[in-house]
Image (cartoon, rainbow, N blue to C red; front, side, top):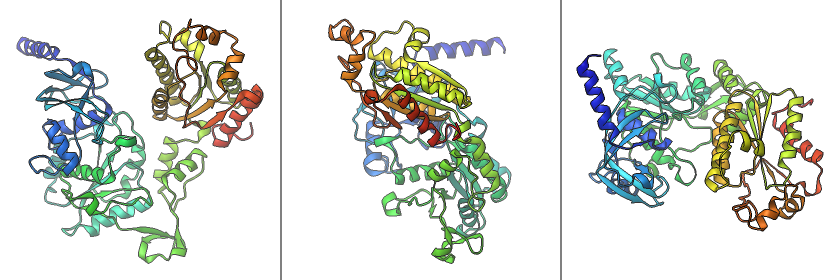
Length: 523
């Protein structure tokens, strides 16, 4: 590097350092990547007027159709920023934002929770490095260039949006759409795999179907922003967003692979799409002919019922073979590798309950039972973790949440490597428990046990005298006395130790683990 280049780099770094650095949440990061790579025809994040028009009318104020608001939520501390460096979770700069508007978003827009927003154009800083399958995250211009070089720029391109493995029914739909549904002639195929930025998900199982797809089928990976709970994109808006992104990749038609029995929104409910969204011909497996045929050619009494995604997951969890009529052998093999039987799958067993509920004692007994069953187990007891992993933290709500997240991170790593992590903190807050569940389920299974021993029983046990000190005001923010315990509504198992022995509670948990397939039946 010459001196002039070094000076320019240092000067650029100095300019960058004058703006605060901010890492957006995963949904906004996905929006940002699609803005920067040309998947969106947008220069940056929306103003309040643009977001409101998109939500209400499905189009921008100038009349351009667009299905979803693309906004940048920021914390209160950045609400007055004039410039912002947007970085990935590892701190690497991705883009710079020149703020054109600061506005407040209420909770009625199916976008994010209420809070501050910044709007403005973004300037590319450097290519993204964070995120899985980076070699397949090609920009739309790259695909357009490949088609032009190959002489296929004028040929129809069928984009297939896939976020689940391509089983026989889906493969028949794709081949039929490529050969028949595109009136202009046989189409090339581009499979757009939708997966989170930080999780490969079932991508390998989708890629396993490549030899069974039409020649010259290409694959790209992207992350279409969605949000859970009340802020999940309606199906129609999700379809339209996929169509806009597919068009950026030069697609002339879009086929969305849906799970069995999932209805597609009507065109009236969805609104006009930038490219045709094909319904996909319905196929059924004919048990007499032992082949897949168009649905109208198979009598109902000869049609095999295709297993849904939940049923497939249960078969994998139990170590059962997937039917050959349902999925190709190479796809099944990849699924078994990605989703091994639960006896070989990582697991976090998370006990939550009041102080004195008996959760630590039960957890120790369960850990011994799991160990005897032949599985590698690590016990993360709340008190021990406090001394070793979270020394120095207070008992404020913020520090208690941080302590639980630390436990969750360690448990997720144990789970990722196929071990069993058993945790026994109080974990009083539902939101923090949900964060831990999400962390763990990126890598394996999560099993929540609520030790629902009543407060008066816990207080009567009180071997450490903590409740007495809390009642006397010596321990502030004590769960169950001066601070709430939010009872789980999503527990896989609820225990009440009031009228049961320690051994009975341990046996109940081990029985649930055997019944669920995490422990072999003979132990």
